[in-house]
Length: 378
Image (cartoon, rainbow, N blue to C red; front, side, top):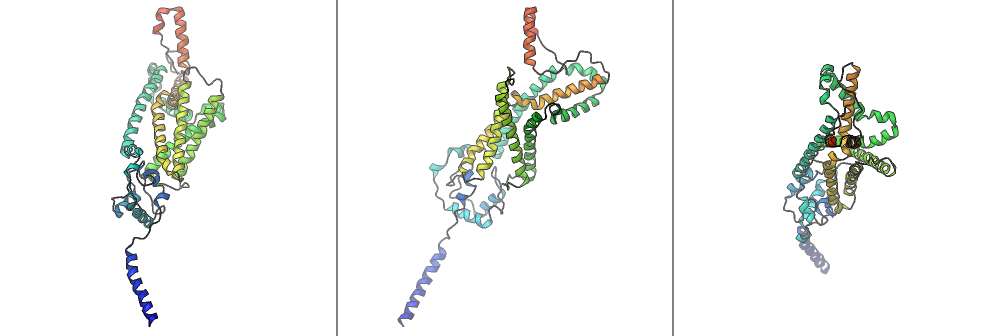
């Protein structure tokens, strides 16, 4: 009888405990601190590049929708990377995280300004600035090349034929860099690392805008991820080669543009390096570094674009244009059309030629020295 009463007592105790246990929330897995979310929202979910999400006021459904579809600069996360069950567990974990206002970093206040819309506006201004000064510089060289003086000859030659010759030259001499291929294939390859690597990065960004507009994180083996990584490393190799050449080539200093040339190479190096670091750190456990490295990347890109019209970057559009004008002029001459002037090589070291001319005039006719103007024709 005592044994029966003992069993009844245990049963009664269990009946009292089980409902109480059922009311206690089940412990959640520590998903947040081991996820890439900490890179933007902070190790304690008190913000970083992204907003604080501790003690989140979102509903579970709203939280899931943002995780799945992204918001602003935050990419979407597919179920393969974070299941619905784990998403709900993370949601409960964030609900229970302590709110610590003192831990909201100043980086969040900076990051709050870097919305997709604001970044787009910033780069729109940056690109417009570069475009305006790039066109100004381009027009200067076209004017020096004497295109205006060639109009009568081009009219007789035919504008359609001239445009065809120019387009062919822009592709063969500009994009394929045939002259360098014929002269030095090793130099062509090193040059191509940067040229085609940068073209690949531009193409990759276009493809990502089309096929992955939410910028969801992709596996490294995914073509949309692998292609820009390969292109980035190609550019980095090309930049390193040029930096070594700048250091060892005793004739690299032309006495005028070396500082600006090296500025371009240095900024390109930092742009590519910061992009690779952003990718690598985002996939490591050092998520707290993602935001500052990403800012470093944005600043490097901005500086590269802003300085482009004033550094060696302008070779990308000036040199192909000058070669194309030379090819058009050669075609006009070959067709028997009289140019009306003697043809000279395109300007390569205009500043040196101008200084020599001014020096000569100062010795021969000092009163005309301030009126010197060189006229070049392709």
